[in-house]
Each structure stands twice: as C-alpha cells, then as structure tokens.
Image (cartoon, rainbow, N blue to C red; front, side, top):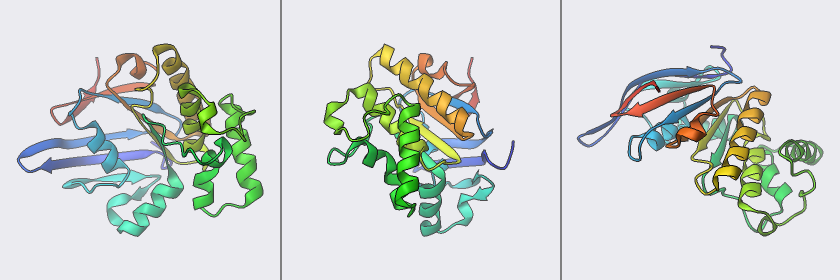
Length: 223
C-alpha cells in the first residue's frame, strides 16, 4: 500500500461489556474503492467514526496518508478531516439555503481556498457528475439522485486522500442508486483517493473493488 492510502492496524472498541470491534487490521490503496458490509448494529458506523477520528479506539492505529490519527490532538484531527477526508451520507446533508455550487465549494471555503480556484474546481466536479448546468440551482429544484451526485462532488472537490460513504444510496430507488454508486466509484478511482463504502446492501457492495464483512466485531473477506 502506498502512503497515500489508509492503513488500519489492531483497531478495537468496546462499549461497556460489549466488544464492538476486535483487533481489526486492513488497508485501502490510493485509487481503490472497497465496501464494508454488515447487519445493522454490527459496528459499521463505529468503524467509520474511528477511521475519521471522530472517536478514539481502545487500541490500534489509523493512518491516513501516513499520518497517525491517534498521535494528533482534537484540533489537529479536525484539521486533517477538513483537508484530507471527504464524506458522503445517506441523507445528503445538502444545505437548502445555498446554491448547488455553493454547497459543493463549501469544503474549499473552510480551507481558505481562493475564489477563482474554488469556482474552477466546483465547476469541474459538477461537470464530472453530470450537473454542470446546475451550478446556480437551488437544492429544492433537484431530485434525490441529483442531490446525492452533488454530495459526491462536494466530497471530492478538495481532493481528499480518503472518501467515506455511509449508506449513500439508502434513500434512493434501485436504478438511481446504481447510477450514483457507479459514479462514486468512478470518481474515487479517478481522484486517486482511498474509498470506503459502508452498506448492508450486497448489490451496492458489488460496485466495489473488494468487499469485507464485519460480523461479531471481526472483519473478513466477504463471500
């Protein structure tokens, strides 16, 4: 695995008497798109939170592009997330009072990127997801599938090292879900990011380069 990817080693997390994750180790290379599947309550969200540095494990390490999250304080973890991680959520998280373009460029605003570069990257990503003509549109004018494509563009606009997608098609019909997942996988690979899709859907996971299953706190190849 190249330093540009993700490396997880010996990751464990317990809540009270319940061992949620047990000594998980895996890696995701730059440009690789993997899926992690598991039933509801299997610990998928906990794993994503640990990878993003939103929670602290009981043991183990998470390295994004060679940087050990556990060695950083809270402020430094926040800065790393802002600069190097992109998120795609099931509920879109598109801000209704901003235009489509303003929603996409928001990560760049937070990073202090100049106006011209923000607009250029936003336009490029919206064209890539087939919404180049919706820059000035209000979110209420878009369908659910279009909103999720906006979310994909926003997740990639700041050129993150890692993209985390948490059930991104849970609110979409099967045909639209397939389109969005294919787009997400294509864009993650094109951007050279390490991509993780967390889902309970086997059809969604089939879009990934590799599928891992989380069950009873353990992670193993699916199949």
